[in-house]
Image 1 (tube, rainbow, N blue to C red):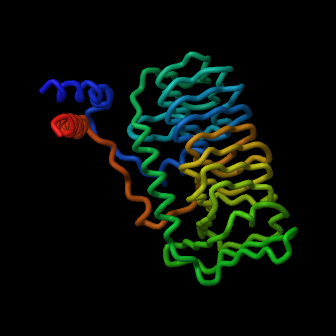
Image 2: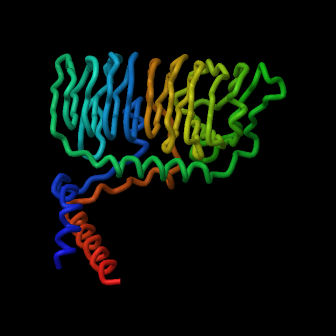
Image 3: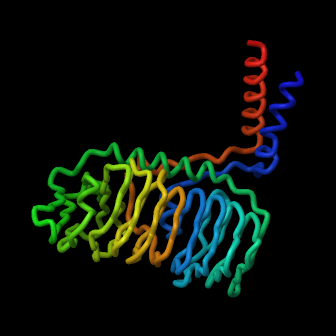
Length: 307
């Protein structure tokens, strides 16, 4: 019995700090509202012209949030233009529009007409799980028959999204070296269509200049452990298990990474659609479910103690 109470003590803080009302995390809703989505930590200077989500800690080197004045988004029942599950530290953070909701603020957060709330309880694990599942699901999609990534001229590359399916979605696969140099000189996609580009490789270095801006394109780095952006890249970046370094160029769509190191602007959100099978909301557990999990963990420890 002592082991049961010991195990419960280890998991009780999670139980006690989680709201009693169950909610959900829908990855599509998140990237349609937030331009920077750091599933763990964010270290940033420069600006996100759109709302920002950080699952754990945010270290600012001088940063502006939501310069374009987007409406507050909602993640797991928490609404704001800046949502940070952990601590905000470092240089000033200026939230140009909307509210800021954070775990704590050892640094200064300036809101312009909005409110600052500290002490929030955020289930960052559920947000991470939603995007890891999304990335995995997208990587399993079948390529569109007539979609083509052409690097026959390594200096002048082209992408043709081909004919979208009935849901208006095209899928294309490519290796990471397509992004390693040259210029994207031609990009073709039907009006209103969305494109999923599945990129293989664990260490991605984007040096190609992708000067086309399209909010309905996702580059899914489903194997990546590190993604470095050293050039202009106008498309969405989904790298749910990677450290993402935004070094230069900026992007006009969203960025999702486990840890994000941002030195350049993020200017947009996702404006496309996703296959319906991939956007099923991930439930955030109610406190009762966490209590069941705590007792199950305790029982497991007790069984191991007897073996």
